[in-house]
Length: 619
Image: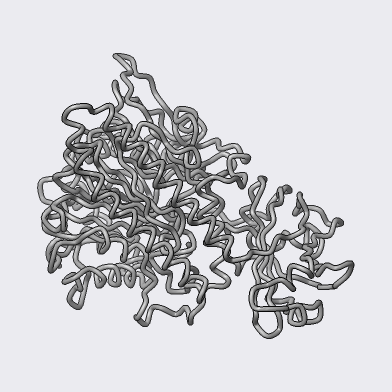
């Protein structure tokens, strides 16, 4: 029987938004090319998000540090007496009465890196909850952890006391010496295992711990409860956490299994034998940053799992590692001098975004990336104003606009963009190698000046990266649309129409395309209009095309009819980048963009219970 706290937590979960289908690569220090622990992570979630970057200052709170409640109906948690500096990458959505419980990436001033992956459904259907903790696991470990294992201790304390409100999740805690994995089940069960120093670990959204480390908290209760529930028979052999606690329909799910396998195959000497995939693998040589990039950018190229057929792979049925829902990709080299810890970041889909170097020691966030006051961001993380999702000139939209424009075209456009991004990355990496020795020496004599140099260099690198993206976007010659400045998806009378100047169609690269894009040439069922954060398969289809007064006019019905597209299930009332895929009967495509303020109640969407926390299969 669930307690009243359990019922409250479930109601809260129905409003909270979970990260979907993330991927993590962890490289032990003895498996690393440079002898440094590497943490690679793709943060994935669907819907309209904005990624914001915060530098949270160290803070002494004293003997009465106070409390905080993250999710509206979760437990009230005690804050630590002091907080180290935090580098916080925040995934910020608008969700009525909710927020992102299971996203965000943290690096703290003690050199601890924290990220996580959804692990799909567990078998647990009667979780023990005492108020419940969700987002608090990552945030309070970031604020309290002095080492990777201390982060495990903090997480264990929280889960033992309150119970975990999520479905199944793998938390990853790393410092410069070691890496720990803690995989949690809804309620008060978890398994813990250390990644060997000479091993590489890959998690693609399922439980990967088979035999937990023997001398870790919670193991005896974990096994005893599995026996009592009939999930494990000691006569069958050693206890296997993943087999015992993963829901049968999620255990060895193909949509996770092939990402696990392909991710390992990219790393030299890591191809596993037949049978169950191992928790971690010893590579044939040292693994470097470029190896981790290849995993996080993977679309299964050259394998039967690549079913893209030359189109964009980001929404393939086989669900690649680099997906349309990827919000950010991060690779961290953890150093002894925490200020010199190198954080490479690519916003959105990393195959079409540059990994730009950042250092933990920066003293300010470049304006295009900034999330404003970090204390206010914490207060509003579960009460995000919809205007925070407005399309702006921020770094997030510079990246995602390019990616959204390329996806329907792909082919040569994607190849050209990837080449330009690779050239930029090579230039930046050469500058990093030349820059670091002098800054390391400077820290020994003038740490303030050294941090100023780090800050100035990151500003320069991020500015140049955004300029390169702007140039790539301009080269695509995206159509400038005349579209409604406001669209009410509940309006059954006002038509939604998009107009394209015929002159713009004439002046396309390659010649006069007007004869191929006249009103009678448009393939209405393949001409789509919708928001950039949703896959084009969920956009609304054109219902009519006419040419008048020098414009091609495309009709999408009234606001109500337009809002029947699948994308409207998650409508956010904000200034949204709306995209047009204009396709003719010969299969030729053009892409356009407009900004419109969306209003009106979205159609009701199904909600999830705690055992359905955003598995990779529905991402």
